[in-house]
Image (cartoon, rainbow, N blue to C red):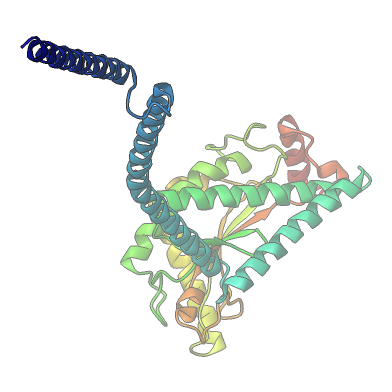
Amino acid sequence: MRHAVRQRSEEEDEESVFVSMTDMTVSFLFIVMILLAFFATQIAPGETVPKELLDERDAHVAQLIEELQSYRSEENSLIPRLQSENQILQSRVQELEVTLQAITQELGIPEANDAVEKIAQLRLELSRLHEILANSGGENRIERYNTLVSIQRAQILQDLRDRIVAADPSIEVGISRDQDALQFKGDGLFASGSPVPSRQGREKMRLIAEILRDVIGCISFGERSNIEQSCNEHIAILDALQIEGHADSDGLDVSNMDLSAQRGSAIYREMISASPDLLEFVNFKTQPVLSVAGYGEGRPIADETLPGGKDANRRIDIRFIMFSPADEESIPADVSDLSRIRDLLLSGERL
């Protein structure tokens, strides 16, 4: 009996030890799980990349996106701007082409290359005049004076041309190759074989008469004269303002000579009718500066085999013939010296 009890007690002790070991193991595992859970809370995902770098990356990406959007916005605004600038450039090219064509027509030549060549010739002529002036050295005062007057006349003609075109852009007016005359060509000024100017031609010539009246007072004498050093730097004096009629090659030479003279006279009447004061301007010898001449078909400015050639040659030129001194004593020194020159010429001592 005692043996049985002792055996049961041993079995209970063994069972108690097993339970204690189990409890200890569970407790140990529980502690390990708690520790793992604690360490898990201390470790963030992706701990291998610092958070500052991630933030920097995100900021850089945001900046790139912003720059891309800005570039696209700029690109969208750039295209219309380029298109607008292209239109402006095309318009400027067209303006230059019109200007070149006008120069070509003004010079009476068919090709643009010829126009460039002719302009170059005119510049060479002007350079030649300046060279003569530079080389004169006071030895030939007459040549020096005439050269200065030629340069001033060219400036007067350019000013007149600009004023006429500004007043009526439809008027076709050019300057002669020798820079001594205004040329009114084409424009339907005269019908073929007719000495009578067209209605539009008459209106334009009347306008031109008024502009001439306002300019020639500074280079001529008379009641309306206003000669001053400020507008007449080299003391250039107008000897004659010649209205010249011209004809095309149709018809006989003799008939065309008469026709051209009639055309000059017709324009003379129109200009005097529009501005009677023109008759009051006189030269050194108190002669009216306004005069008329006819040259027939002998001085064409355009090729009549080309369209508009004959119309251009049926024209009127207004030529500025300047006083040229016969000797050094007749050269005016300044505005105050003009009275002495006039008295000298009127006395018959100088022709």
